[in-house]
Length: 275
Image (tube, rainbow, N blue to C red):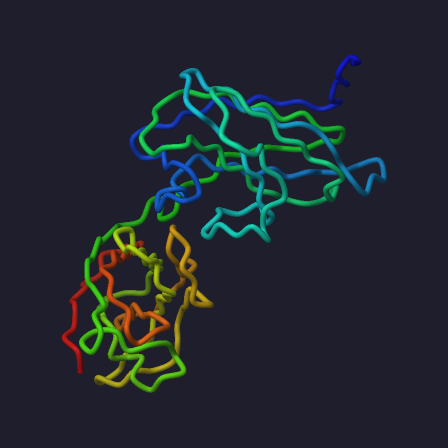
């Protein structure tokens, strides 16, 4: 048993879990609503690696966790392969996380969470490293944008037409987006009530004279993450029309979904019947 080393560089950040930011654990569809921070390690002195300790202390006796992801940008999908470090099991009121030999000129994202959604509390996040760094809060997904919440479902033979390898992919639930001016859009698709999470994708297509054009934005590979899938904020032209398509990989999917469509400017959104 020995004295704990004192980090050469320390910073403390105060935050809170509130009604819009207490998202629960990684199995919750709202996990990405939790407070997120960009940790930028500045290196210096020719160091190639950096180490230190991160701690999270809640004011209330809630089970808490701290997770570190690669990138330094807002986390939009939870992947184990993208996780650099974690405090492990949720622990009452206090947890700690070790960074051991990470790149000294890298950026990372910290997510502070409680075990269940809507566990409200103030918290104190402390970072101590052996090299210079900065830590900055990240704005929530869609911050400053208009939001439309749309609901729909897939059912075998009626609204589940499979993935892009199938020519009937455009027969999946579709939403027509009309804009009068250039703007930016972001789409997130979730299946929070599905008993078994289907593999899903959300894509934005150009739509001209009822003809589906090129893919303007896509959430990428089909996945069954509890947080769903999302496109990145994408600039679209205007005046113009676009199709937002919510699709499953399998033909026999039977599940309801929620589509969150964010836009910088006002857009008109209309659900379309199957072609």
